[in-house]
Structures are given as C-alpha cells and as structure tokens.
Amino acid sequence: MPVRFLPFVNGEIYHVFNRGSEKRVIYQDRRDYNRFLKSIQYYQLQGPKPKFSHFSKKNIFNPNAANKIVDILAFCLMPNHFHLLVKQVNDGGITEMLTKLSLSYTKYFNTRYKRVGPLFQGEFKAVHIENGQQLIHVSRYIHLNPIVSFLIKDIEKYEFSSYPEYIQKIPDGFCSTKEVLGFFKSPESYKQFVADQTDYGQTLEEIKHQLLEEI
View 1 (tube, one colour):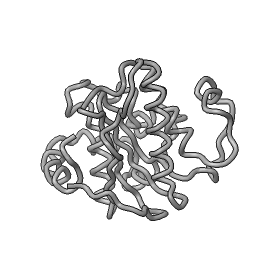
View 2 (view 1 turned 90 degrees about the vertical axis):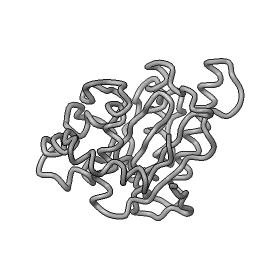
View 3 (view 1 turned 60 degrees about the vertical axis):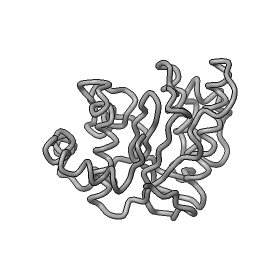
View 4 (view 1 turned 90 degrees about the horizontal axis):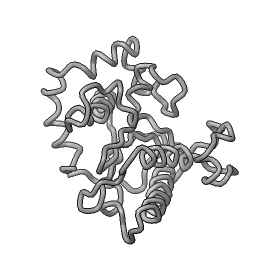
C-alpha cells in the first residue's frame, strides 16, 4: 500500500494521485479537464501573479521558472482520478500545490454542478520515486492509463495527458520532460518504450504492488 511521505524532500520526485469520492467522475467535460490543467499550472507557482480568474481565461503572464514550488514532470487526467509525477522545488511545495489545487477545483466543481461536500477521496496519496528505472516505468504507467482503461485507442490523441509533450506533438507544454527523456536517445525512443507492451506487461504487476492502491 502506498505511503504518504511527510515532509516531502526538495529535489526528490513523487508519484501523486487521487480519485473522486466514492469513485465518482470528477471531470464531466472538456471545460472541467481544462480547468484542472490550468489550476495545476497556476498553483505550481508562488509569488505575485494575476488572479486565477484572469489567468484561466488568458495566459496573460510569462511565469518565471524561479517561482515554481514544484516541477510537473508528467500527468494524466482520467474521468474519476488523476496522476501527477512531481518534483519538489521548495519546502512544502507539493503539499501546498496539491492542497490549493484540490480546494480550488472542488469549489469550482461544486459551484458549477450545484453540489456540496468533498469531491476527492480524502487527501492525495504519494509515493517516492527512488531511482531512474522506477521513474521511467511510472511515467509509462501514467501515460498508458487511457489505454489500460479502454478510454482511447491512440494515446497520442489523448488531450489530457503529458504524453503528447513527450513525443513533441505539443511544443509549448508545461511539463519538465527532461528528467524522464534524459534516459532515452530521443523522444522516438521513449515512444517505443511506452509502446513496448511485452515489457510493460512484465513490470505492471510489480509496479502496482509497490506503488498503487486500487484506484
């Protein structure tokens, strides 16, 4: 069973994830997915910045990388849960970002759908990434979620994942892909790694056992 690591350590990478309360759907449509993605970008920054309502409508400022409290390495949003691969930059960065993200999105969701109460199943969960092999396999696990869940047949076309950034279909994404891609000769090599179903099948059960609750 995954362990929530507190405090998180600067410079270390964690797989963080959570799902909807009672496994409920947390993204009803494209607007919801995009709101959550904008919130990730917004709350990974500290210091002076425009109100979220302004930022969410337009990218009206160029965030300074020095203002990040976390680096987002990879992500995948699924209908009833999300996965993030996150590197902590500043003390308390992961907890601060995930707390603000969850509260902000819950407020938005409850207002839009006229509901009350928690949206997520308790606090987010996190697992420390201990080495490079674990890092690349977890990144693949995250990116393959839409395929494994039979949500889509071609992950290159899945909009709510960082995978298109990794294979350079999106040139201006917000993820720090170098941490993972540094283990590969090229984005094409990473693409082949993700597509390698045989190798994936051999490691999936071990990854689930070590890292994940049933989600």
